Image 1 (cartoon, one colour):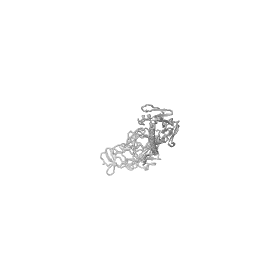
Image 2 (tube, rainbow, N blue to C red):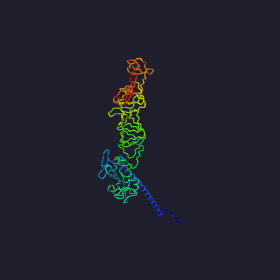
Image 3 (cartoon, rainbow, N blue to C red):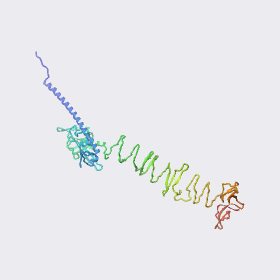
Image 4 (cartoon, rainbow, N blue to C red):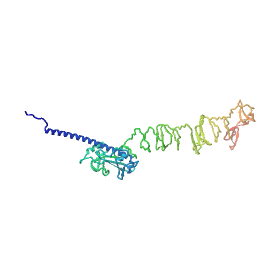
Amino acid sequence: MNKHKKGFSLLEIILVLGIGAATAFMKFQDMKNDQEGIMANTVGSQMKQMGEAVNRYISIRYDKLSTLSSSSSQTSDPGPRICSAAGCEITYQTLINEGLLPAGNKGVNTQKSSYKILLKRSGTSPNYVVNGLITTTLPWIEGSRVRYDLLGRAMQAAGIDSGMTQSSTVASGSGGQWTENQNSYAGINSAGLLAYRVGYDSAMYSVYLRRDGTLPMTGDLNMDGNDINNIGDMTASGTATATTLKSTGATSVGSTLTVAGASSLKGAASLGSTLTVAGASTYTGVMTVNNNINASGTITAGGQFIGHNTAGDKFSIGSGNTNAYEFRLDAAKPLTIWRNGGEAAEERLLVSGSQRNLGDLKIVASGSATGSITSSGNITSGGTVAAQYLQPTSTVVAEAACSATGAISKDSTGAILSCQSGTWKGFSKTNKLQPLYVGTVPNCNNKVVSTNPTHLNCSTEFIGYAILPD
């Protein structure tokens, strides 16, 4: 009896080995692609880190870069930085020395390439701008093929300012957003280099503030409640708004100052123009005005109002005791009330109530009163006292003693008595109090005095009373 042995044919073995090899190759390719993708992302992240460090360096060393100043091993500016008329070149070590890269950074990326960092100055003084370009020194080439696919992935990781060289003369950003050429940056010398734009024209540089202030803000600056300290001059073309506006030194306002509420000035305030206050203003110190004060309303003072004449003599309104309102003159000079160009007969002083003079009342010119004049003392006249009636207010007794010779009084019946030789005496039958008139006779040429006005020919004037024979 014949027996058949079972097994694999050579063809079957070849097929199995072929399928296994193909599967292994595909797995290897997937693993390689993954590794290349990871490497490209890492290279891009490393370039972004380098670009951010250079942007910060431009911000803090703008004063040196704008003057194309070289540096090496200086304490305040460590460098290294090599500058010429064409621009400046720094290295990764410069960034480490400035504390912008970690000390462990070797200046070589995962693709084994180092960096070339070139910075250029453009514009005019004092508003120079600084731009730059970072390029890898080793092209990304496998065999004779440039790996633009991996460069593209690296650009995605590096961000908007990244680019690559597709020739030995030009570097460009994604979609041609920016281009630089070899004439400006010598680091562009081969196709397949990863590039990164830095400086004023780059997109990421706008997040930095320049130390010299030449970088204009493209949006609002939000300090998130933090302070801004040690400012020199601050100039605003718009409105400055603050919950509390505090100045520790002199404050100068070049135009109108409008205050809606109360204002408290404890120091000096200098105004070059108008001060308009809609509400009340409180001054706890002295306010000095070197010019006029014009008020359309009331000026109220809790203390004295002090003024001066042209000679510097002072007068004060206010103060005094609680029983009076005082107007005090500090010099032995009169208080004059007058009107420029006025007439002497014009009314100057109108007093609604009574007046009390503690000293003499002197009337230089003629004076008139439309009401009564009451005095608790004597009224003395060096001239004529004219009145419609003479009415003594005192009552005396005939033959009583008196001291004021010539004084006139009355008794209880109203009869006129006079003080004669120390005794009150009545008028004799031949003497009585008679009116006196002055006039002219004859032909109005001679002025005479008479008790009978009919005896006078021309103008007649009553001049007073006299005790005369009947």
